[in-house]
Image 1 (cartoon, helix red, strand yellow):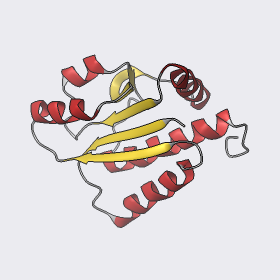
Image 2: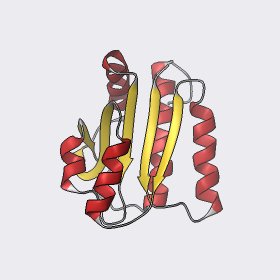
Image 3: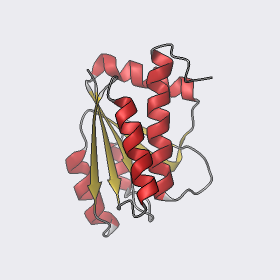
Image 4: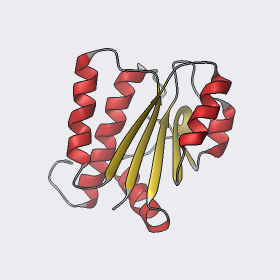
Length: 144
């Protein structure tokens, strides 16, 4: 079973964001081992060092200048990664973004939009898309 790790900088302050993340973590449990690592906000350089220590397997960094893809393409990417690695790490930086060193380490820089989203919301959106990717892989009716 694949291990999906989410590395995020900054805490979820509101209970409704934490609840939404917990719901998607629960939904992911039949498909993967899920682990979430929350790092404190600091300077980009310190955040970089902490993030890089947590990166395992194939690394996907969320950043506005990354490539965009459809939900189906993300499902295909996760499936392809599972053929070469049992671990995939998704990284969401702080409100200041990600240090260039994290982007260089990443195997894929992924953009969800050229819009700017609150980091708390982005965490939920990413978890939903990971869940959607697994449901696509398993031909479930969740993805329409």
